[in-house]
Length: 90
Image (tube, rainbow, N blue to C red):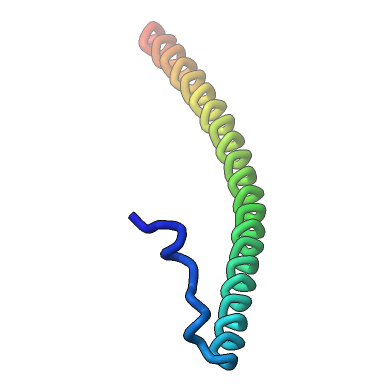
């Protein structure tokens, strides 16, 4: 397990140019992390909206399927009645 002190960079042996380069790299890393957090948040917002839209579409399709099933059952019952009437007439 790493101790907190293991993560600290020893700057004593670095030249001034190395320290400047290290500072620049650390700033770049911080900038990239910030940009990634912003991008992830933006994607989350966009995907949340699309997921909500898909959920609404799914509910709408479920209602349509239910209505079609009811209509099918009614049509089958009507057909059975007609066949029964035709059989009685024959």
